[in-house]
View (cartoon, rainbow, N blue to C red):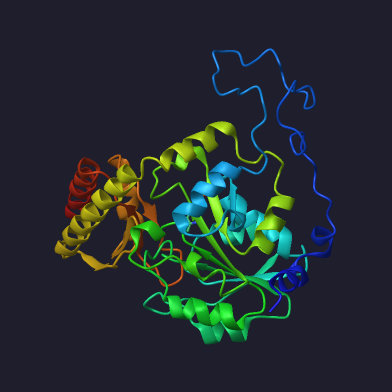
Length: 354
Ligand SMILES: Cc1ncc(COP(=O)(O)O)c(C=O)c1O
C-alpha cells in the first residue's frame, strides 16, 4: 500500500494544496539576524536563552528525544502545545467543516466533542460496553461515508482502564479513515503503547503528552506519533513557532531525568493501589473501578452531594455522573500521600454526615 497516497486522499483539498508559511529561519539560522523583526536589544532581564529570538520552527532536537524515547523516528513525531493542539490540527487537516464527521466512544475525554464543535464537525457516538471496552462491530457499522476520524482513548478518561489493543487494531485495520488513539495516560499502564504499530497501520495516530507521567502539565507539550505522511501535514498546518523555547528546553531537559520520572510513576502506582484498597474498604461506596491511569473512578450514592461536600472541605475532585454508564461516579486523581490522606479523611467525614 502506498501510505502517502492513502493519506493524501483523506486530507482536505485545501490542506493538500496549501503552501505553508515559510518562517524566517527556514533558510538561514545564523549570522547577523535582521530577517524576522525580532528585538536585537534583548529581553528585559538577563537572558541566556536568547528569548528575544524566535524558537526553532520544527523542534528537531525535541522531536528526536521523543522519538528515541518512544522507539520511533523523528519524522514520525509532531510536538505542539499539549495534545489538545494535535487534536485540533487533526480536525483541520482531515475534516471538512459542515460536512465531515468523527466517531467517539463515550464515556470518554470531552475535548474530542469540543474540538468537533469548534471546527463545525458532526459526531457519532458508540458507547463503550458495561466494562468500558470498545464495540468494534458497532463502531464499523456506525461509520458513515463522511466519517473521517475515530477517537479512542486508552487508558480511557474518565473510566481509567486500558482499551484492548486487539480491538483498536480491528478498528484501525477495517476503518478507511484516521484512527486516533489518545495515550495521555499510557505510562501509568502495563499495556504497550500503540506507537509500535504505526508502521503496520498507516491510518493510526497516537497522541501522548508530557502533562501526566512527566509531571509537566504547566509547559504544555503534547505529541502525535504517526507515519511520516500524516506528520508532514501536521507540520505544514501548525503555526510557525508553535512550541516556545522555554517549553522546548524544559521538555528536552526532562529526558535526562528519566530516573526521576520513573520514580514518580512508581510512587503514584503505589499510592493508587493504597487509594483503591481504602476506597474498597468503605462499605458506602458501591463500586471502585480498576485503574490503569493516575486517577480512580468510583460510584457512590448521592455523588453530586458528595462532590459538593468535599469541595466545601477544600478537597476538589471531579463529578462524572453526567457521562453515560457513569451514573453517580466521581473521579479522583491520585495525589501525594498527604493529599490522599486529606481526601480520604474528608470523604469519611462527608459519608458520616450524609
Ligand atoms: C485523555 C486525555 N487526553 C489529553 C489530555 C490533555 O493533554 P494535554 O495536557 O497534553 O493537552 C487529557 C487531559 O486531562 C486527557 O485526559
